[in-house]
Structures are given as structure tokens and as C-alpha cells.
Amino acid sequence: MSFHLVSRVGPQQYISEEGAYNYLPEFLKVLSAARVLILHGVKSWHKTAPYLPDLNGAGFDVHEMTFGGECSYQEIDRVIQKIRESDIDLVIGLGGGKVIDTAKAAAFKSGGRPLVILPTMASNCAAWSALSVIYKDNGVSIGHEIYPKQSSLVLIEPRVILDSPIDYFIAGIADTLAKWYESDSLLTHVHQNHLSILYARESAKLCRDIPLKYAIQAVEDMKRGVLSEPWQLVMETNIIAGGLVGGFGDEYGRATAAHSIHDALTVFPETKHILHGVKVAYGIMVQLALEEKWEEVRRLQPFYQCLKLPMNLRDLHLDARPEEDIRKLAAYSVSPDKTIHLLPFEVTETSVFEAIQRLEKSIYI
View: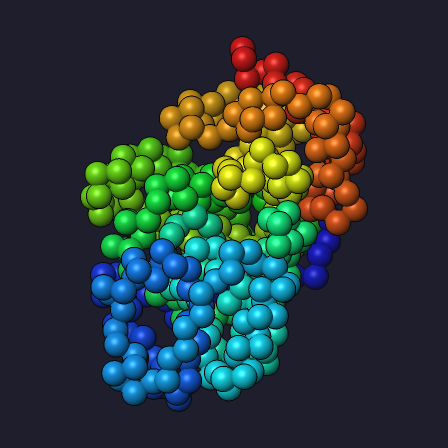
């Protein structure tokens, strides 16, 4: 297995501390960014308001734009139009993963404008990675785009994320855990001895070890509103470590089977309300079944049960679906564009369907 390796490690600057947003006016002045567009979600805008500096009062021409709900090409084009109409100098993405991915896409496609990211949840590595996951307007995943340019600045205000919905935090834990299981199958078959591959491998280990050791405590601390060291560590792992796997490893650190299963699940309306990382959690189980790593499946079961992550079709509300529909799920997961084919063995509709069936039997043991 051999890919052309291009590392896009992370943002140019990163701050994670109480009061981090206060660095924003200084940074904008350094870049001579007079006209700023803030793309934000409704809830995230209210959550961050107490901590944001007064950019208008500091002399900046601030334009606000409420996110439309999906990181779709239509939504990206809408933001690009606003950027061009208002001659925006710099884009700020404030919110969750889809807001951030839309801001990334619009900033790059409108001429490579500088981008500042203020994540309000630790639900994925969107703030760190140089890519956007693209959806149709109805929420069906249709792939991703990789950009040659990283963001200029990422600012994390821990108090904002601590106050975010805990189910998104748990989804982020699952999405982070997938970085180990998906990249492991690639990184162990690399025939190149690049230092960046070693860094990707170590980052992937963090994506496994930190959640399995600290995540349950971190979730309990978040429920109690305690900004603890375990919570801080898991929160930053969700945002940073997952992004570093692909950042250092490029194609060797990409998603494989778990995210392909996620994409297939988005086709079923029963899963529309289920968060990205939660669907990926089930994808991890299917990937382990494909690889016949049943000891690992059993090792993860208590962790999954504690965090209420899906381990079977019943947990996804798909157990009433006929066998024909589960075969369609398997077929969609192995369509030619899916990353499941990066696994170091042939994967077919039949092998995925059989893995799902074996998983159903195994989980009840």
C-alpha cells in the first residue's frame, strides 16, 4: 500500500484556555482584517455571547450569518455569495462541526480567505482538520473535500464547551475512538518509514487510550459542570488528536470502514436524529466484525454500555427492518467511492452483511 503523503498538521495558532476569545481582536488587527463574517448556529451564538469581545466596538465591521443546518453545496454557495457581496477579509466559523465545515469550505472556495474557528462543542475534530464532510440538504452524507490550507487560528473557551449538550460530547468520544480503529488497519500496512507516519500512529493511540481511560469520568464531570483535568483532556483529544491522525498521516490516517457504515446509515430515516459520532460508534463494531477482532468487540462492550453507544441494529432502531434493507445498508457502505475499500483486504456487500449478522449474534452473548 502506497499513497502520496501530504501532511496538513493543524491550524497556524491554537489557544485553549479560559478567556481565549479575548485574543481575537489582536489577531484580526495583525491580519489587517477589517471586515469579518461570523457564521454561527443560533444556540452557539447565545452560548458564546458572554465570552466574546466587542469586535464592533474595537473598530471591526462585523457581519453575522446564521447557519442553514447542513454543510451542503447549496449552503456553502450561500455563504460564498455573502463573502463576495460584503468583500469580507476573514471568516469566523462559530459552532459545531457542520458550521465549521461550511465555514472552511466557503473561506477556501471564495479565494482562500483567512479562517478563524471557535468550536462550541467537542463532538468531532472539525476544528482541527483541513477537510469538510459534505451532505445533501436532506442530511444524507455524500463525501468529503480536502483543502490545501489550514485555518489561521482555533480558539477554545472551555466554559462554552462544558456547557454544551453532553450527547454531542459523547458522540465526539466515539468519533475520536474510531480514529484508532480505522487508521490502525492502514498504518500497520505502511511500507514507508516517514516520521509523519510515526506521529500519526502515536496520535491514533491517544485517540484510543485517553477515551478508554478517562472518558467515563469526563462525562460524569461534565454532567456536574466540573471543569476537571480528565474532562479537559478528553475534550481536547476529541478536537485535536483525531485531527492529528489525518493531519500527519494524510491518506494513511483517513477513515475506513466505520465512517463508510456511518454514511450508509444516513440513508435510513430512523437514524436521522442520531449524531454523527454515535453512528460511527456502530461502524467501529462492524469494522471489528469484518476484521474478526471479537476480543476487541467484547473489550469495548462495557465502555459502550456505559456511554449508551449503539452496538447492534436494535440500538439504531433498525431491528424491525427486513433483511433486504440491511443488505441495502451493506451495499451502500461498499459503493465505489467509500473509504471502506482502503482496508487491506477485499470488502464486498456480502462480507459486510455477514459481519453485521455475526455482530448481532455476538452482542447478545
